[in-house]
Amino acid sequence: MYIGGMFLRKISVKKNSKRQKPLSLSGYVRKPKGASMEGVLMGGLPDTTYTDSTGFHKDTVSYSWNGRVRPSKGGFSFTPATTSYSQWSADTVTNYLGNGPLVNIHVNVVTAPAGLSVVLDDSLRVSPVVIHALEGSSLTIATDSIHLFGSGGRYRWLSWSDQGARTHAVNATKDTAFTAAFVGENLLSVSSSPIQGGSTHPSGDLWHLTNAVDTISARPYPKLGYHFVGWEGDVADGANPIVVTMDRPKSIVARFALATSVDRKEGAVREFSLGQSYPNPFNPSATIEYAIPVRCHVVLEVFDLLGHRIALLIDESQEAGYKSVRFDANVFATGVYIYRLRAGEFVQTRKLLLMK
Image 1 (cartoon, rainbow, N blue to C red):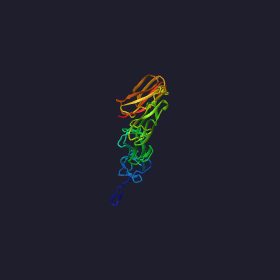
Image 2 (image 1 turned 90 degrees about the horizontal axis):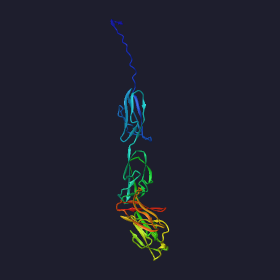
Image 3 (image 1 turned 45 degrees about the vertical axis):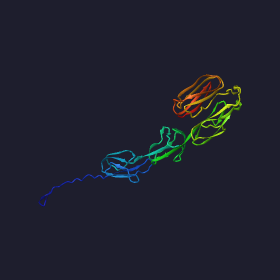
Image 4 (image 1 turned 90 degrees about the vertical axis):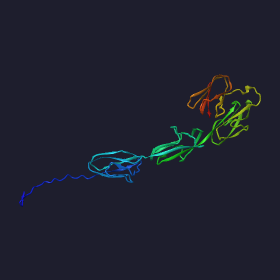
């Protein structure tokens, strides 16, 4: 075009395509029970972004943005762990679940007397135990039983420091210590000798709290011609009954004797019986008495607590009568053992405690 002596050139101008607005990436981070998680770093976003007090985060990215968002906070894991974006083209809300952190639950056992190791729970771990649990989770703490055996004997459970039952649930809200208190018990073993001469009340193996007292009486069989002579063992006394203070493990035997010279047929055995070994606890040997009313085959064996036979004391036919045999445990370790009498159809077992 020619205007005023000049040629003008027509230039066409194309409009640019519509400029795309930035995109919003936002969402919430919460714990499993819905609590908000503040201060979680949303790594991978253009800006340094943390969640606020409500657990909310928001950032902007350019259209067609490529990236990967990874939430992080010490001690926590997140679901999903990361979120990937490729050529992203829409505002997006992504929520995350924060698991953790781990808290330490300390479980300890105290004994009276103090400083003695005991076995704790069914996994046989020795106290103290540290359990790592997710914050906010629930777990159960328990002692293996109401009675525990340790280096000093047997212990009876008294209480947990949080006053819970022997087996109870606790919440892992923070690092917490739980203490189970146990008090020592001492074993009192009460037996009679000879077993045809009389009995005691109570009798057998009796566990008592440390320093507890018990009253034991002897009961002779006068119809068989026996009378009470006195007590032997850890308490030497002629009184009947006697009061025993359980400041330590003790074994006592009620001794009986024939009052007059009588026909032994009057003292004939009337029934099968297996007496409590004495002394009990013992070291290194103990006497086991038994009675059989008829001739029969007799087997007397000793077992450990796993059921393994460790000694065969008698395996023969015997005439009727009152019998005794000595068990020598020099080669065996400290512990509880079981002895069993089989005589004809009669079977009876008892326990004895070796303490070296």
